[in-house]
Amino acid sequence: MPRLFRRALAGLIFSLLVPVLSAAWTAPAGPELARLERALADWHRNYNPAEQMVRRPFSSPGYHTALKGGFVHATRDNANYALGLLDTGKPENLERAVAVLRRIVALQDSDPASRTYGIWSWFLEEPLAQMSPPDFNWADFNGVTLLQVARDHRNRLPPDLAAGVDAAILHACRAIKKRNVGPGYTNIAIMGAYVTLVAGEFYGLEEFRAYGLERLARFHRHTADNGAFEEYNSPTYTVIALLELSRLKAHVRAPAAQALIDPLLRQAWETFARRFHAPSRQWAGPNSRAYSSLIRTSALALVQRGTAGRVDFGVDAPDREDLRLPVACPPDLEPFFTRLDTARTVVETFIRRSDTVGTTYLHPHYALGTVNRGDLWNQRRALLLHFGTAAAPGYVQLRVLKNGYDFSSAIFHSAQREGTVAGAVDFIVNGGDTHISLDKVKEGKIRARDLRLRFEVGGPAAAAAKVDAADGRSATIKAGDLVVSLALAHARFAGRDAVFTAGGDATTRWLDVVLYAGEETTLDLNTVADAAVAFALNVGSPVRAAATTADGRVTVTAGDLAASAALRPYARK
Image (cartoon, rainbow, N blue to C red):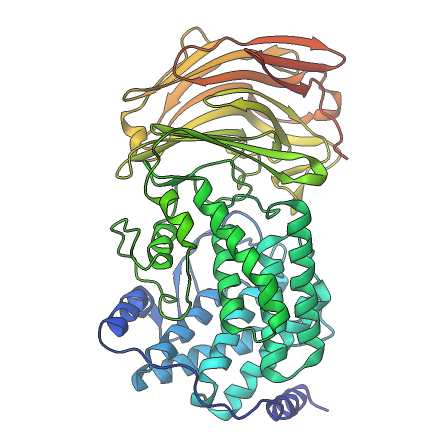
């Protein structure tokens, strides 16, 4: 039987399962429609009639794609654009939405025998076979969006396209179920539960309804046992969790699911609120996953929306989901977003099985957060300090850079009390290079022309900040009345001592500890006998740090705080 015929027949059969529904969506009018059109304006301008998709300049986090530049047509962007067009209710937007949806449906891998069945490539320009590697999360992300299309606009689509959207959702459900992501992958655990559970209810498919409910229950149990989302305190993925839990609450009918959703939704809002630094309007560290060290405007707009404007940051950032997705911040958490009357400390065990603990000190003039132990992948914010004002915030972030990019096999250890940190960095031989799992270090050997620890000062407030390396063993960062003092207790790599050096460019300042710089070479971490940096940091007065070495470890002390690291790179269990 020809493949196209099989697909058409499958779509017809599947469409018969769909109940006859009237449109659930009420088209907006007046100011609401105007706001939605503003949210879509950039996408309208970037629509490419030749491809019947929106395009944008290429960008990526540095993995999953081998593309380097140019313009791309992103499948996730276009699924969202098609939904936004349908949400306007405008007849003139329907034709474009239909055209875009046809492209999205056609770009999914719909071959059940394929390894990438049910997912999409990131970009039209890079098919799944060329990705490095394919991103299976796209079944979840695009599955969520297509379900909004089916729930709210299915009867406005041509019958063949409606059947195609139905089939695409089913393919995504199968991919999600087969992959069966664990509950530690916070945002995908939630999104996959939404796609399968809501699709199961909507189409009357018990297989997916039961799986989605069990997946949600498993995530609820895991989070309750763990005490926090495993993707802890993430400005990116806590917001996604909050939005997708809100979507679950709005769309799921099963009372058993609703009982699971409410405490998780409360936890997401608490995570955001308890570490929000109201004076600078920043999401304080430490962060398990973040794509920026400063908060996105969309997160502030979410607080405004969730509080019905009672918390008003003066942010005007229309979003496609403003009308579509109800969000509600618990009233008792609203004060966290508006004021910080006195300094306070938040200590929380993020991952119980590994005893991963975060400490955040929120002071009227700054916020300082650390994790007691964690890698320094580029999405981590293991030590993060915020300062400045809401209009001109700044940050100080600890990084370890190999050839200018964050090195995932550097491990941070710390102890913190209020504005003081004792910290140390060592290295593992079996971790990641540019990514913790997609780009692994092989046999403990790395190619490097440069390896350095960096205290990076960024954000609008960095322009006025001054960094001083002093005598190389101590250093300061000065920004207005704020002074951050650093003391280097131990810094040695492959038989060479290292010291602080100061630098900067047009947008950032830094204090570096250069561990290696020279011709590109292979560094065998297995054979390096001494590879560790130990320091102390204090906001305010100069800090004293002392280091002792014993039993293959270096321990740094700052007052009664102590942190310890291995002198020799090791294999992490």
